[in-house]
Image 1 (cartoon, chains in turn blue, cyan):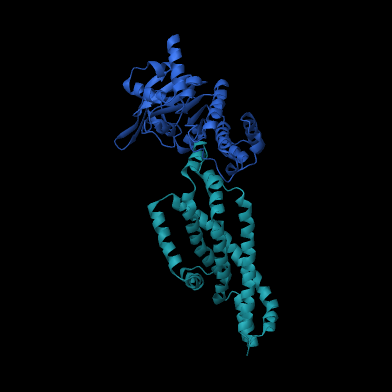
Image 2 (tube, chains in turn brown, red; image 1 turned 90 degrees about the vertical axis):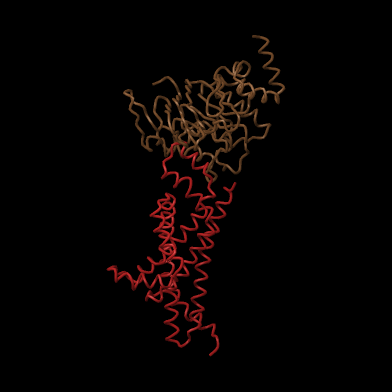
Length: 272
Length: 219
């Protein structure tokens, strides 16, 4: 055990000459809630896709809960590529909530939550169903268990997507802009939900444009640009005190459109 | 010698005895075609160049030559290769192979309508390729293409009438036999047509029931 839910070492992903990920080093301890921000095209989504091995990195290593994903580095330095079967085994430990949700429209909500449990984890039908129902209960959508994704609201679909990832009991949950596809009045609801998870000790990496989430919920804020992590620390500190010009420009621009946020940030600065 | 409706009804008992042959051959062929067409679709999705080239050659043959000739080849041509099949078996082989390629075309045409994201979600959850096909992709493909698959099934069912030419004693052949023994060739053919129409109505109804069941799951 490394003691980390997730650890990447020198992760590189190239698209032609472009380095979408340029040696990303990242350690996320258990229970930590990390939010990842950055301008569009900075590599946030590529990072999530590499972490789930949907888009295998060109170089570097990923460890999930002490297991190598895709490639492993032995203690004597040899590098070994793992089999596809092994990749599928380890990636179950990472729960991914996609921006587009990607629910399966031909299955009931309950089946959406149970199929992977049964097929990939080998749980019995009864076990998978009771786990699914418990999660729907926890997310306060137990009444839609038998509905199909097309019959429920966007906010409910979002919860189903979250529940589907959680049903596999992952070591860490990844969220790709969980609020971007939602109506404005639902954003707060989802942020409250994520806050609840955070308080329950769930390890999370959340790509988001919601600085409110980064400020109020996350323990740690990462800023990415051009495939590199440029800033990493407690959210308030990263937002207000980073000197790097690219980081500064970004937060100045973003906060300019969030008067409330500016105010809060100013207040904390006064306190310190 | 006008049209005698009584001669149609008179031929019916014998024709109805033969209907089962068509229906049985059609059902077996349709099931084999679905299975074969599905396997072809999966095989093509691997995008192995040589495999897909071979499939394309077969495809152009199946699509570009009359079904009747394909049936002749299965019955009279295969023995030259050392494979001697009974008329029914040769008929089933020709019909199901022919239809499998069309089923595969139907399924493949609908494949892009399933978003990559759904497959990525399944992959990220640790599902292996086989359950992704069987749980996520194929059930949706069959639902989306159901009207076209039912259409293809009616083509197969009607195709069973062509097996008359390789001595399968099915409805059309019986109609011809009645025609030559009663010297009224036309009426038994009308009777056969009525029976084919009835069988296809059964198929279409089955399809309609399924379509209605799937309708509620639409997004």
